[in-house]
Length: 290
Image (cartoon, rainbow, N blue to C red; front, side):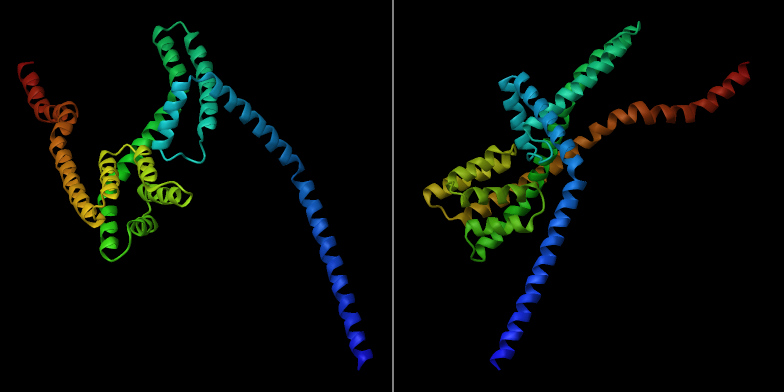
C-alpha cells in the first residue's frame, strides 16, 4: 500500500511538472509573439505621445494665464471631457490655428478684397473654433442640468421622506439618473468619501455649474446644515420653487415664440404668398394693357 501510494504521488508530481513546463513555455512563446507583433506600434505610439506632449507644452506656454484659467472654467462647465483635457485642447488649438493660417495665406494671396477678408476670418476661426465648441457643449450641459433639477429634487424628497438620509437620497438620485446632474451628484459624494467636508463638497458642486437654481439649492442646503434645519422641509420648498420656475420658463418661451416666427414670416412666407396671389393679376393686367 505504501509503494502504491508513493507511485501515485510520483506520477502526480511528474504530470504536474510536465503541465507546468508546457504552460510556461506556451506563455513565454505567446508573450514573445505579442511583443514582436506590437514592437512597431509601440514605437509609433511613443513617437505620437512625444509629439502630442510637445504640442501641449507649447500650447500651454504660449497661452496667457488668464486665458488658460478661462479655458479651464469652460472645461469644468462642459464636464471635463476625457478626450480633451486642458493641455490637449491647447495643443489642438495650435494645430487648427496653423491650418487656419495656411488656408488664410492662400486666400489673402489672391487679388480679391473679399477673399482677403475671408482669409483673415479663417485664421481667427481656426484658432478659436475649439473655444466655440467648448462653450456650446457647456451651455448644452448646463441646460440639461437645469431641466433635470426639479425631477431630481422630487426623487430626493421621496427618498428622504421614506427614511433615507440626505447623502443616501443623493446616492439614490445619482444611481437612478443618467444625465450630467446625476454625474455631478456622484462626484459630490465621492468628494465626501475622500475626506472633504460636506460644506466644501456642496460649494464645489455649485462652483462646477452655472445654473442659478442649483446654486440657490446648494446655498439652502449649506444653511440648513449649519443651522440644523430639517432637510425634508428644505427639499420640499426647493422642489416646489423649481417646478414653478420650470413652468415660468416654459411660459416665457411660449410668449417669445410669436416674435421668433415674425421674421421668417415676413421674409420667406409673405413674399411667396404675394407672388402666388398677385402674379396672375399682374400678368392679366400686362396682357390687357399690352
